[in-house]
Image 1 (cartoon, rainbow, N blue to C red):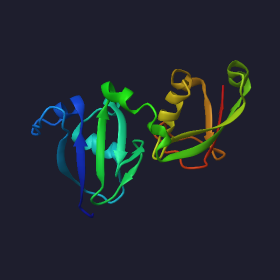
Image 2: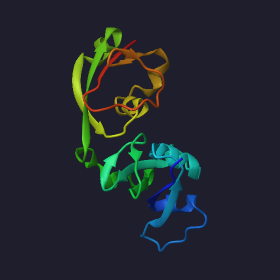
Image 3: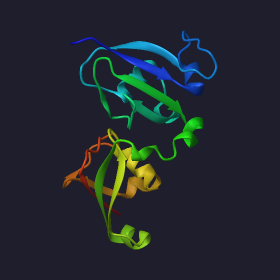
Length: 169
């Protein structure tokens, strides 16, 4: 196992999640965090720190907007912003996006009046993030979803640039 260290910056009310970190109001809590494996994602770090991913609005790795599945490397800088700061970053998806093709079939296509489109999402995004973006999270139990022709295994499956998703009821 390779030990590596990343630099974390917690903003807003996320600073309270790390008891030992006291910072000046308006400034992030900054600290180094040792990670045990070389293939660690932002989500893995949040789990180690016992921070609920649902409290996170935006993630930046080395200044680039990304999702929970983004893999981190030694010396990466990770900025974590809480949900109450989300409006500060309304246009940020234009920074470092990946593109995915989505094909909607069956009853869902009739309901949505669209059958195929491309969308951009942050690098490292999960299927869970995409379903939330498409307002389909509530229907997840009834959906059949495949990525590049293969049935999905988990909502936490990472989506990659130019992946092709098929979603149907």
